[in-house]
Image (tube, rainbow, N blue to C red; front, side):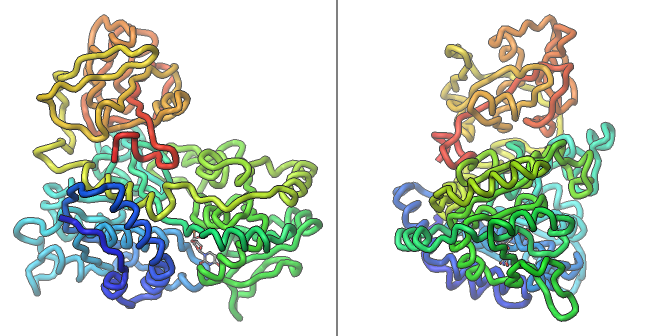
Length: 560
Ligand code: UDP
């Protein structure tokens, strides 16, 4: 049984101080200790005496191992990407606070030891059963596990969770399908259940949203922030001078209205390439950055980095985040950064989460091409009064709640929910209940339990050329890939008044669907290809949607 841990002390000891990156994580865990403890108390009360199984968990941070080059640790103090470090620190804290039994590895040697490799036998595959219920790692770690567990990785795949910042869509994850259909990248093709990939933001419902935490302000801090806001103070998003390149004109315009601050890394060999009127603080420790954000009115992005934690931290400290719209949107088809990433997602602004899930008055997204509008917007921002805000899913409680639900319910190993490629032979155990515009399904007592519960399922037909992501979104719902298996049956088409003159089984990530030009219903042959993402003018797709909690998109109303 898992027991909530209200003290992060033992975790700090376990993390150790072997690398600069681990020091950064420890500082962060310490900074958030009080918030973790009070969030744990609230979740403890919310779940009452519900039994939670204690899991044996291995966290293997692949990108921090020497063997993968560990390019991050030396950059921690020099403006390198810190978002990943933030996320891993919060994952460790979450797993610890939830009371699971944790082992942490940042080297190949530790990985081998923990997996039970016989001592002194180098990279020989471990023998015996897997000593963990869950393994959290990243793509680097996955590669290392494949090398060192060889064949046994296949057997243990269902235990793995991959922390994958930008996400992996099913079409890219399915090795054969990706290879045959032009979706092969350097990252994908692991044949996992796509829900085993866990992203930084809720990018695509095909993956699980892991997220991270943004520190909340208390009532005293909120009052002090309001009192001390400096209406003409702006901070520029971007720790590296390269992110400011070519933006001189905007900086000049902005400087007419506001004092501009930056946190660009510099040293004697690398003076910052920012205009002289910018007050550059250099890279700051997180709590000092927070103090700067508390005073600032505006946090402005110039298009890069994409989708990091900093804009949410700025909003949490009462800043307005102003960011550019991308027209045309950036994606792996047209932009170097996304090239080779296993996703077809198109990104229409620097921080789509901020745009879509938060929006006005905290977030303004605009075309930076028109200087008159830019000037007007800056003036508007200086007059707006905005409260600090953290979406619930980015609070400690929100993250604990979500990860708790995943650990107890999601992607179970064989015996419960099958994982792995193979033909699907479905005999629908479900009876349709027509329910005005949508449909719900009733689960007879004898069938297997589902998570999310099937009562949350709403089946919709997409318009041709619409993905299920969009179809569900337009109905105020979210696509739930775990439900595809229940709608991959002829009855589902019939219930939506889609006539099937025949049924075909096929491997295609857009299925189940009806081709617009035929009357045959096409069912999905391989469960690994069920995908919310993806659209074609040739298909009307069948989409499994569900409701979600306000501020916690990963969970349906009855999911906790
Ligand atoms: N950060 C920091 N000091 C600074 C600027 C940023 O500690 O001077 C932290 C910030 O608090 C955030 C993290 O760096 O949590 C990642 O920021 P960003 O959004 O820039 O994402 P990245 O591109 O680093 O992944």
